Image 1 (cartoon, helix red, strand yellow):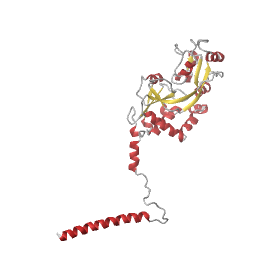
Image 2 (tube, rainbow, N blue to C red):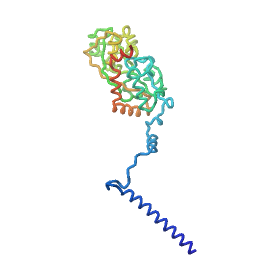
Image 3 (cartoon, one colour):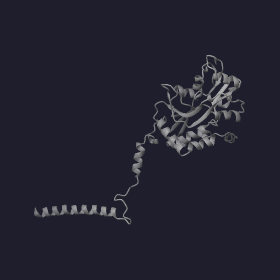
Image 4 (cartoon, rainbow, N blue to C red):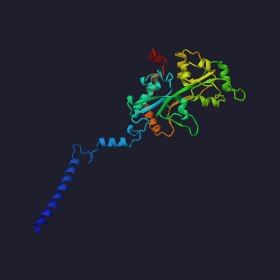
Length: 312
């Protein structure tokens, strides 16, 4: 028993010495340096495991995004996308501001171009909540006020002046209707053309204009393409870039009603109300703005000469 006890004590003593020796080596190693300025515990770079954990915890990481089609992001736009924001009828070619923006945003969210899908529907179906099988709607949507709206909006990706253009009416008549109160100058029967998803509708209502009668507006595509303007409206309310398209590309002679000051249009992306993807889209747009991607897209596509070159 004595021998065993000695062995046991010797083993314990050796273990203790070994432990202190190990700790001492660590301390000496940590303290040794040529300058004497090194910290005792060197700062370590985050490991791959830490990066993976950060991805798991980030609600906007691609693997955590809940989309209509798993592993893909679905954009919705008009059945016939309207220029100058879509310069062709195939958005996958990325020709046009909003077509290119969609793919740039998808990339920022972590989706490859092949994981981008499209649904072609009318803006009315988005605004009414009739169609909800999409992730992000793009196509000149402007935030509207009101409770219980079926859509939520991202932060703006483009701001543009609204212009009032005289079509069937004379500029003076258009200005008079917009400056006179509805009681003094009823606007029933006066035909306004504007995009239903843009800011013109609420602005015209605030000006006392009647816009609910038949044929008081035409769709976004017709306004921007000019195909229905001549026979359907007395005046057009459209953003400055669409106005440039109508005059420079479509060859429409639509004088600007300079006496009228219209508001600025702030175009945003539309999503189904309550979709947590809104916060991630906003974060992606922030990052794209910070690195200059949004400015590059705007400078690239909002130029009449570029439109001529791409369509030629």
